[in-house]
Length: 367
Ligand SMILES: Nc1ncnc2c1ncn2[C@@H]1O[C@H](COP(=O)(O)OP(=O)(O)OP(=O)(O)O)[C@@H](O)[C@H]1O
Ligand SMILES: [Mg+2]
Image (cartoon, rainbow, N blue to C red; front, side, top):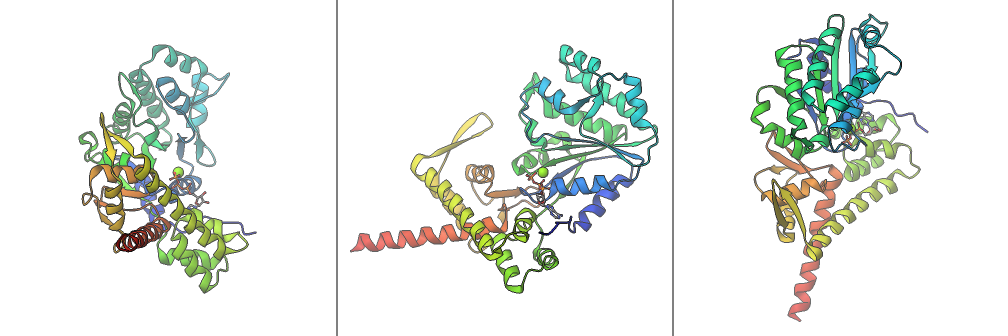
């Protein structure tokens, strides 16, 4: 069994460190396809921060957030039997290494008060003061992972906008804390990117799957033969999670081919369901019908290309394929591509099978 070490990401780590080395001015959105290694990357960066940094890492994965109270529970970490002053003193004190919290530590009394008052305004005002105090001795870093989970939460106003206002206060206006927001929901990033409120107030950092060279070097470390490396790349591409999976399995070729066949089956089933039962998606307040033929038309475009322009296809098919984790939109480059190389190759296989099927049908119709 190999112990898998964190690999590469030197460029991304340099970029994040450079951000952390300067005064906070912008919100940083870290985005990328599913399972590309965003969380792993930020975790690595946090682990190696100098001691003056204090990190509040809030991961919304697995959290059910439908309103104000759920959000507070995710944001804060209760420090029972402690006074507010004690908490602040402990986290602002000069320590031997950088501190990390998986929520913002507060007292039970304050949380109870917020529960009763039910106003985001009070919470964010309190937090502003909180970060102000800490920043006298430390550099606070606030990270919210899986931010899209609160994209549609609404209590009078949309929570996400309240939160963005708070992030803008912390960065551009007060320069109090570094703010990182992470998501693999590319429709959410697209929405943010086109939002006037965030214009020139944030920057974007793409964490993509490993490229060919990086993947091959990674596999070299774990003794893959030339043949195994080619099979791995041709079936799994540079998706870190899949490469890690291959490292420790007995038959690497079989597993890699299995992943490809599985993905092909998933896409085929998805299309079959739309063809036979139809499907709908909601855009704004409108329910829009998904058309099988249009989906196939979009997938066909990937037969000869790895990426396509994000506006080359109809909006319903685009959103549907992104929602179903088949495609990924990169609004910064205005491009769309499959969520992984496995998906790209699977799409090609599906399209090939569909055209073979229709040839057979045409043949039997003409006899
Ligand atoms: N740089 C890396 N070196 C080694 N393994 C990695 C690396 N990045 C990711 N991995 C592996 O891939 C797995 C998935 O990574 P991670 O959870 O960070 O992806 P993610 O982009 O945050 O996923 P999601 O889109 O679900 O949020 C990790 O658990 C780890 O095993
Ligand atoms: Mg993640």
